[in-house]
Image (cartoon, rainbow, N blue to C red; front, side, top):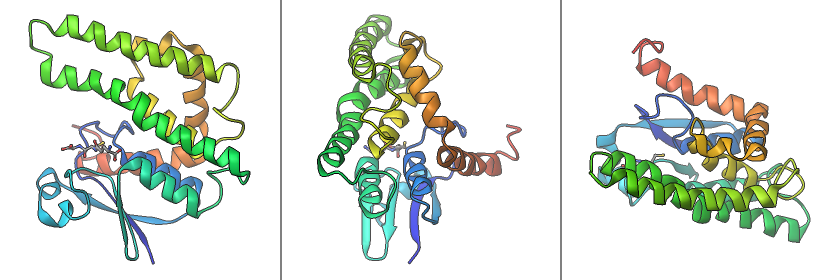
Length: 219
Ligand SMILES: N[C@@H](CCC(=O)N[C@@H](CS)C(=O)NCC(=O)O)C(=O)O
């Protein structure tokens, strides 16, 4: 049975590795599981066939035999639970790694995504700069807390886990912003994640989709 995931036919991030199928690709690469990708247009994402898989009309989705899943956190957890390499054997360490997956998607990601939402949807409003200052204050608070917990360690809890994979994927959304530069240990943490061969394979695979639709990156 082949695992099939969905990804943007035309990713708004222009192949920068930010679309959330990247997390799923990365997890599958870490777990050494082959997979196929079904590319979906924005129109197809609103149609019943896709909504049956993803009720919010988004990517990624994950199909394996009679299992269909949505939500990148749940998909990464599923992959990590079924294949070796992404969760520790020790029961308590495993539970803590799962807690970091949740921390990434429910504590870190909302404040980080709020900054993007503000820029796209409210960027032209007269009060945008003031709102942005509040949004960035909330992000700094979370980054400071995460940075304090990580300290000088390589990973959040001993060995690399699916919790790091999900956390780094979320933090990558801030790459290029001055917010991350304030936390050198988080920058180094992200860089360690990106150095992993599995990350690089996933990144190249996702970027290849963008290059194919954009005529080799000329657009
Ligand atoms: N919480 C969901 C978020 C999924 C999500 O926001 N996907 C984006 C792409 S990265 C999307 O499909 N956006 C298009 C849309 O919402 O219309 C997850 O982690 O899977």
